[in-house]
Image (cartoon, rainbow, N blue to C red; front, side, top):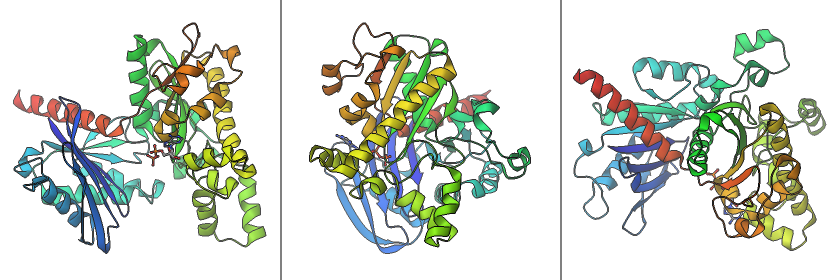
Length: 403
Ligand code: ADP
């Protein structure tokens, strides 16, 4: 099956056109600056040079028309007809408590997404816009939604409830949801295959470290805890996000600095994290370069970043009653041997013995052969999971219809 995977943000749409049988991306690209008259579409067919098209792309519908236009084009295209797209799979950020897995998109599903807008005011509206645009442009093409939150719905109440009045959970749905679920699910399954073990027998910790960062405790194939919470701000230190804080300090900063709710939100989401501590950059490559130059605040930023990961490895091992493998993924997790080294230092008590050579050579299993707990580097592929889930759901529906 050939699936168009869409990740619709407020001013951008990332896309991949994936052959699910071959698990191969035939084309990929991004539309940026949607809403402006100088929006840019960057497109790359698997065997072609990257191309850029500038145009007036005022909304998501026009952006998707542009994507289809380039996919149909003679020189850079991959399809002859819109019908060559068998299905569309959407990354949807927030499924709330409604979806514990990927779904076929119907009008009822769109309604539930709309009901969940309050939980993800920045993310769900553009996701819905993308779904509605596809519905208008390709009305007969099946669409599926794959949720960032779904994998974590297996968390028990002790992991998802906050220490606030229970009525607020019931009334406003305030609880831990967790994000990056597609990635945590994918790398835990991949890791179990690489280890040659059944996932239902494994205790895994997955660390997705990109611009946004989160960890998950995956016991017997199910997420039992994760570091992101009600929003993707909680947990680890990130590029520009603070991660865990004493909640009172937000009120304190607001009163001391005279900040509005919006300004405080921006401070914690955009000016904190690696950027806030270092004062230099939100990009780990630049932080590491500054650390080598002995930049004091960059060192603090790096150490806080890695320390928090280490702390959660301990916490999640305790939660699961042991650990079989620690898995790193995402731009930092896959590429930074320094972060992995810091996290794994002095962890022999947990059976972790990192092999420094394998770590630097970016092998997949980077622990020593006799390490009781495996340490792994597993590249994530969220688009592939979205395409595979979509293909599975659509195939199932077609089979049922054929009966
Ligand atoms: P996103 O969360 O936006 O998908 P990525 O998963 O691509 O982001 O991760 C981006 C992060 O990965 C940046 O902080 C970047 O500096 C970091 N990164 C990429 N390559 C390296 C590298 N070789 N060494 C250290 N960090 C890296």
